[in-house]
Length: 341
Ligand SMILES: Cc1cc2nc3c(=O)[nH]c(=O)nc-3n(C[C@H](O)[C@H](O)[C@H](O)COP(=O)(O)OP(=O)(O)OC[C@H]3O[C@@H](n4cnc5c(N)ncnc54)[C@H](O)[C@@H]3O)c2cc1C
Image (cartoon, rainbow, N blue to C red; front, side, top):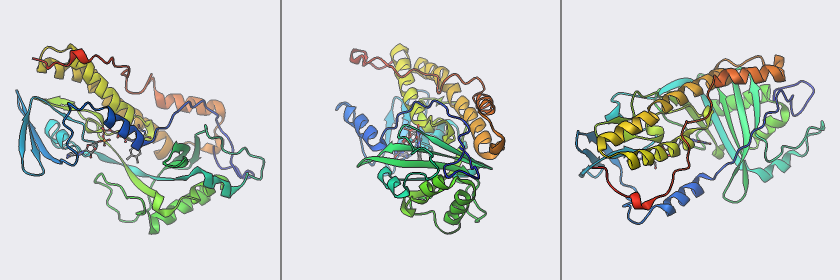
């Protein structure tokens, strides 16, 4: 979708099948937490300060100062991972040069905008809409919320010159997008979005608008000594792929498969590295191609046709057959609950 002088809703450049399903993060987390067997000791709020790997054990230092020994430490501690520091010392996410503004609000508020007067269709619940602007793009879709469907949007663009330091992974919490950041967002949407979609963004309350600087990190390995990395700890991928949650789950199922087959700790670590070592790197590369095409060097949307869009899209995928390269249908066999020797 892009700005078109005569239309309130813009010009549809390409209508692409987009079968997708959104999950509520909190419900997903609660489901996983409920499925955790009672035999697992789950210590909520126990911060880990650092870890050290050795040939035959791993050491965890807690924020309380306590130090504990384990056979293996799996670092699934997200994009600021402290386990990563022990596996890949000095590896830091680097800033991509652009940000995304994000926002959400209850979808029933769309009624405030009325039906688009130019006969453009209402926004079907199942449609994700992408708006292309010079130097950016914005994806809008519905997500499940606590009391009903929500509008959610993610808008990639270059931030204004505000003197903000963006070289350290951080984000601005909801309500933190004020002053020049908020004005810049409004200027971009009013100048480049078809009016209806600028109004959709404009309905977002300031306390539900936030900014996420875009980072990524390509690590050289996922294991060292008795340490192993999974999910965002192993690699930080720009959000364009929307692959972060699936990749974390795939890492978990790959770990399970390696665990079942391995007859030693070394065998387990080598099998996991073989299965997942390249995946993070491939996902980082894919997201960089998507970011380049959709945020850094966007095409002239006004000149794009449907065949040109299809070719542009294929160029970004560059042979990527799927996301993450790991089936998620792990078998559940509780009898195999044994420790590698
Ligand atoms: C705003 C936003 C929107 C996103 N939307 C999507 C999306 O639509 N689809 C998608 O696939 N992905 C999305 N992602 C990315 C996705 O959330 C991550 O890729 C995914 O959560 C990674 O899972 P993880 O288990 O590796 O890490 P996390 O989910 O980050 O979990 C890490 C856990 O480790 C804990 N932890 C961290 N450090 C320590 C420590 N020192 N001691 C103890 N505990 C620690 C944290 O508290 C946390 O519970 C989004 C991310 C953001 C920020």
